[in-house]
Length: 259
Image 1 (cartoon, helix red, strand yellow):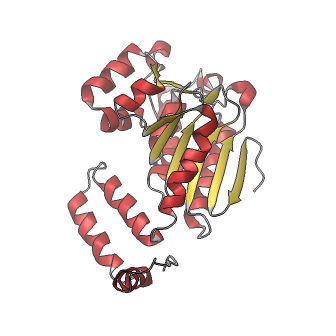
Image 2 (cartoon, one colour):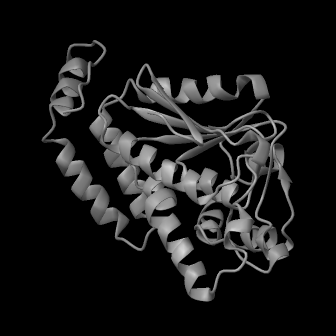
Image 3 (cartoon, helix red, strand yellow):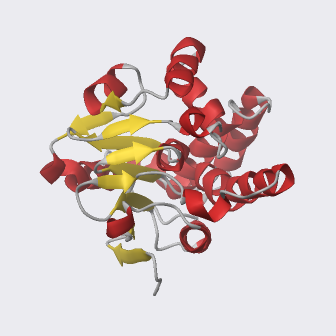
């Protein structure tokens, strides 16, 4: 797949997506968001893709925010539409993807960049990374789900503190408050993400998708218990369930096919 603002490469069932605007600190402009929407859709519908690693070009920034110049003169209605379109096509699309997304946070993850990382199912940060939501310094608030996802990850009090002070936190603090899963040296960032996905690749793909769907249901005003029961039942109809049980009984490793 050829993009202007992204590098996308599929290797050994892992889709590597790099936001490639290093000179602009990988800021999210409209064109980049459009390309992200396309690659997210591709990942979701392509059986070859078992997981996605999302990162930024260079070592300075994952994504240092949105491209403010593009919306500096927007009206209220235009602002709402900007947020709604981003939610539907990118941020919610990542969260609701049946494929696990890991954000490999290689540097600054600020504003829309942190919101993008939080939309991913897991986050790994380089020990040099800094994270924050500075929107109130511009007279704004996070508009791509940041107020909701940060609260889900770190709790109400800490979320309000981080959003209203606009203070950045280090990767270590982010790990301590539950904002990221792991902190590793910059050189180990992608390999740690690969380690997680290579483990997930050994599991039943449809069960992985069902697990993600059930967890996300608990956060989105759905009856998460009902969704879990429904997805649990569906698993019994898969070939992978039969393979998993047979392999367990025969004391061998299961070979899943995603059916």
